[in-house]
Image 1 (spheres, rainbow, N blue to C red):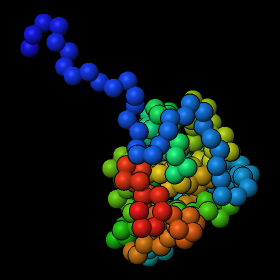
Image 2: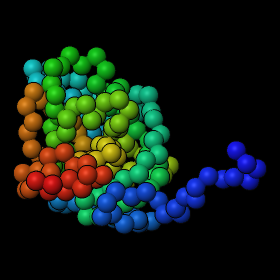
Image 3: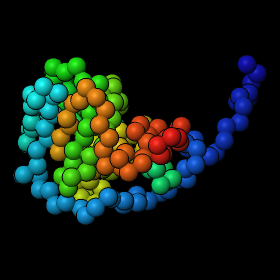
Length: 196
């Protein structure tokens, strides 16, 4: 390599999925009113396809091993926010030791919201139940006290006010999926709506 050779110049623009624009703020979008969920009444339940349950209170959940992922997030409404900082519990921890043959998950939220995901997308260090954002408790308008965080998919898959996951052998569409949104929601393939 010649002295001073720096390689090809790189673009100063960040890499964004197609059709996305960069935002510095954190827009608030919800399918309904913000539920008031207090940590002392919050619980998280994983239910297998056979009906077996594992549940955590807020104290039990926050005592689990914590991760602090820094990830980019992409909303189907076309905004992207880069290098967001979270704290939460990996789904690998929550699913550890769960006896299941399920291939899918249906996520449930306080307030009635649901969304579906392949179970593989919740494993392998790819998803968390997050309760802190930018070093502070997660505000209610952003899904506090805890929300799902699945940053490799459009953000509607990162359900706010999460309360549990039901493991399924068959895929079952959630709230936006029954309204015509894509069943998977990969931002890099622009899977916004059914048929994309």
